[in-house]
Image (cartoon, rainbow, N blue to C red; front, side, top):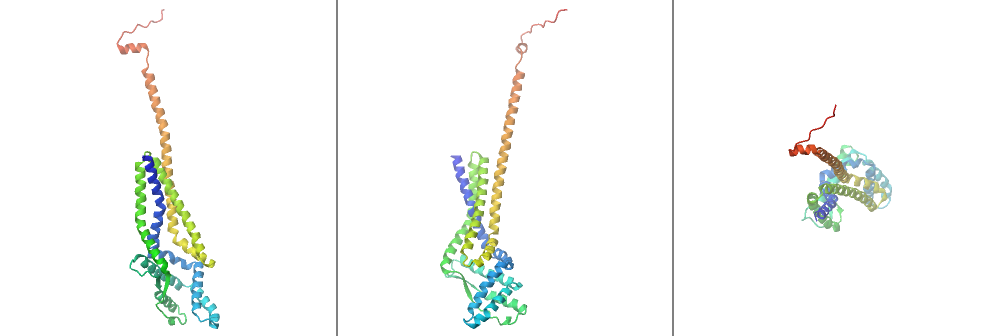
Length: 319
């Protein structure tokens, strides 16, 4: 019964390890504005991200032009201007401000239960103001005439807001309770086991297996995410963003794998060393017992000396 209970507790603890790592990464990594912006900021220098942003912004600006000769005439110039802008230092500032504004809006909608159940929107006025300030500082013509208007853009549809809010609350609770439950279950399973060394070895192997499964899940999630990108041209940029956001999760998966294998290997080597010592100790005990037996076995004369009976004289050779 103790072995069965120990096996069940250890298996459950190892199953919770990758789930706990995923929940902790979501709450303490993605949901932290500073870490999110710090992770996304270097991507402004990536060529794939620049091309994707230039295409999206250029198409959006061209769509605002009236259909006709003006669109056909100014469309290529607008796209070239936007693409040139993505190679300036001002683009990095605007990229960081835009990511911060979007993240703050989404996070506010997820954490505030009294928020509007409608779509999550972000006001682009701060981003436009930062863009205008940078262009004016760079002395770009007509930059001071750029209008700064409060334009709200939907980043999360209304039908997905409620589901995301519920999922975030569950992950927020899981990020605290799942690691604690995994540690308690693992310690309890090792404690109640008859052979604790074997239970500790099984725990290490289970943690390593959980880390490997987490790494496989991250790789599978990348493939599914890129498959959902509507335009194949933007998939390299989506891959760069996905890799940047999941870098911490990949590190956690490899850390769990290495830690589990190290614990299991240490327990295995310790057990082998102990098994080698036991036969040597057994041989030493048998050798000492044999020595005592040989020493204790004596001749009849020695027995008479012990019993106090006289010994017959020893006859010497006659001369």
